[in-house]
Length: 293
Image (cartoon, rainbow, N blue to C red; front, side, top):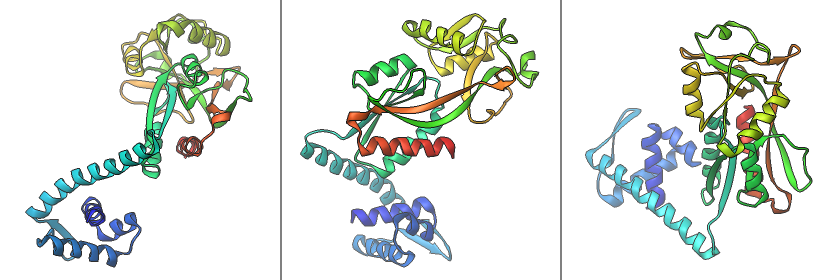
């Protein structure tokens, strides 16, 4: 009956028998037969058909809601049983930069979890130095970060993408009206970085040496705080993207350039070469597709 419940849930979720059948990888006639078999076993009508449309009966609505809880509990029971038999939980821990666009990461986690439902994903934020330290001490399986060191043979250095630097500014700031900005243009505007107290000096040194930043440095604890600091006109936030981020009523994004050329940053996924697992490689591949898609 569990499989029939899942077919029924797909029909309700998709609001279409054909789409539900495609999602479940069976034919439309087969999914209709499974629904009929479920209704016959229960002795109630779950759906009222009106041509190509249908609606839930009161009994169908009750059964749908309760079945969602039951199927969730059943799937978790199976997963926990397998983990217990194997002696440990299957897990992959992923570290990523605090300023990394987590919309792409969320999509990757969703796709990976659908493909590998028995593997739990743990996400950990950090600065470049924090993530490197976690990877070195084997406290994370894979790290998503920019490349600030020469690649080491001890680690797999899986290239993800090249992204360009933009200055996030209040939309009403005069600098937001320019087509591009140099370090000299920004020297009197504080730069906002996201870093805990212990890593602030490393972050400041990197931006001074790599971007030639000459302005004052101020720090935020997280990305939301950094955006609010920008909106309140306390400074600008350097962000990276493959294309110009979308301006809105509050924030604008202007490319940062050096000698007329855009500044860029290369992102990689790093993991220990001697502990490569298929799930790590799969996660990195899915992430690369989502970043570049």
